[in-house]
Length: 230
Image (cartoon, rainbow, N blue to C red):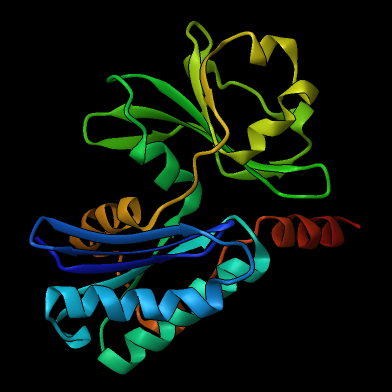
């Protein structure tokens, strides 16, 4: 079992988690615009509680996005700085996957995770519960709420809707919203789920050097794609 520190500041929530041989320690709070003041003290408190040094970790995971541009940069920079100081690798983790992974749903259930992307858009993707993991059914994307769709793999069943992006459900199609089984808009990406996802990523050899880690903005990628097409 890998020992993982995980950080997330991608939304209004700020969280840090420490997974040590199956034991989970965590800090979580919702305090918008205070992430830079909260994150490192959370890390220090977790390390002190566990009585371990940073360089004894196997990796540092972080919420790489999508989410708030400023928030993603805070977690990315903190993870890179801590990892460089401790000489350990990092593991970027999808915020949308972390929300789906943490959901308590039955085997085979479909989930659509969505975050408010501002500018009347949402970051979103679709997932299916497969044992102790979730399988991506669509690529992560940013779009108008009306463009959110249920993938064919879930077309014959309802789904669980998670995240702040579902505040826009009145702007989504009736065909989509009519299939919602449960909708929870107050669900946030959390470092605890990211730590657990990072264990599997480390086992698959997906940990990387701190300098190689990149945030995922999605909207940035769309803008560049449009520019290339012109």
